[in-house]
Amino acid sequence: MTTPRWTALTPLVRERRFGVIDRPRLAEHPAFAAASTAAVVGLSLIDPRRLDGAARAAYRLATAAFTGGYVAATVPADLPVATETRAAVGTAAGGLALGLADQFERLDGRISDWLTQRGVNRPRWVMAGLGAVGALAGYAWDRAEGRRWLSVLEAAGDAETGMDLRPVAPEVRAVLEALLVDGVPGVEALRRQLDSVREQWQGEGFSPDAWFEVHEDAPRIAPRTQVWPVAGLVQWGGAWFEARLQVHQGRLESLSLTVADDQRGGEPGEAAASGLLDRWPRVEELEIAVETPDPVR
Image 1 (tube, helix red, strand yellow):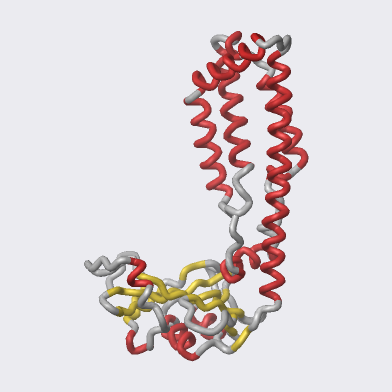
Image 2 (cartoon, one colour; image 1 turned 135 degrees about the vertical axis):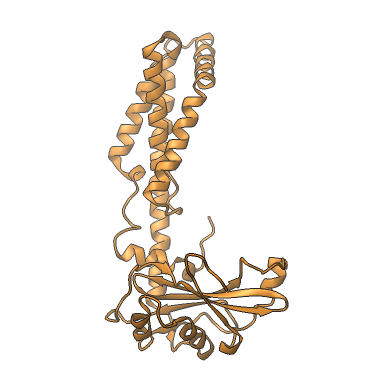
């Protein structure tokens, strides 16, 4: 996997500081390796062709449950998805295993017969051994993947610790202040954060993303992680763009300028529209839109 820019990893680094990201996945625990290997061996020793009725149904349910649990536990480390998402992925995998049980069992039987025809006296034991090797190899891969991703986060954390923080650029600060409109819950706390906010310097030239650091003692808002419900809209070259503020852990985190989803009837190519981004809009160019249950611009 290509390592992303450090600025793109900033939210993950901050989550790691609160002990979230660097908790080993279930797939990286030795107990999981032992349990999954035992399950693979146990299921491989069973010849489903010799089962019927309730026994076959129980075998299929056990296989589906193991498949779902294994897939949910081994979602790649660089996809920091929520527990609910992992559960959904695992449920889908288990359902697929159950739906294709006939096909899998026919394949299992063909492999067993193929081994028998080549003089293997105990094909089920051979299959169980191969399954155990596969499970342990998967565990080793997951451990290595977890260590690799953690090293990426550690490097990003080191980079963030040594980042060059500067006063917020005037054009960025003007847009930021314009989005902090009266009447939105939490606006007063965010305005007080402006007293200590600093911007990460990303080099010379324009960037459509600005990343911020706020003093630890500054007041926070809730919900602590949210997209600020105020957008700054601007039209350039027939295309609409929007400035959006991200709040993380109750603090100002970033300001981004992107092509707006709603082009008000026009459909300029996104690549062409993105090519128009070469500066931050002036406040007088902005059309401020406050989100409501039924937004009207």
